[in-house]
Image (cartoon, rainbow, N blue to C red; front, side, top):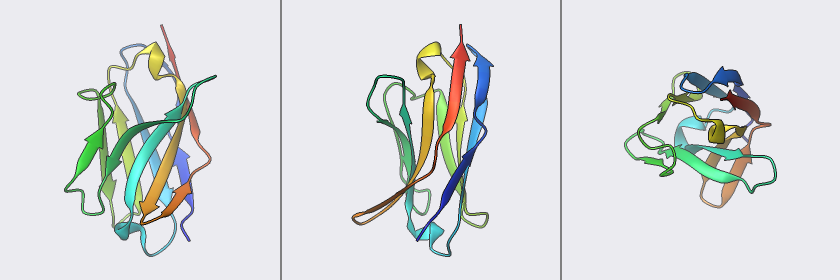
Length: 116
């Protein structure tokens, strides 16, 4: 069992940065692929970024490539999402995801609002 708690969301002006954190409980954190998803009002949840258990493989949605950076610290059971050059269309609730095999765990989400 893994519990995920996101933090770091808030209101930011377009072009600004924001860093999200996701703290995970459980001793098996380092075995999970970790990811970030987001859901904007009226839209389906979409993939943002993911990182393998070792950090050796990283994936981004095309819409955030070059602006967002995902990283993890297995010693701290934490995954991060550094978001730069934010755009109003990045406004959404951001969810942390832990994935292993056929199992997925989700956090409660953190709101990000980007004002123009």
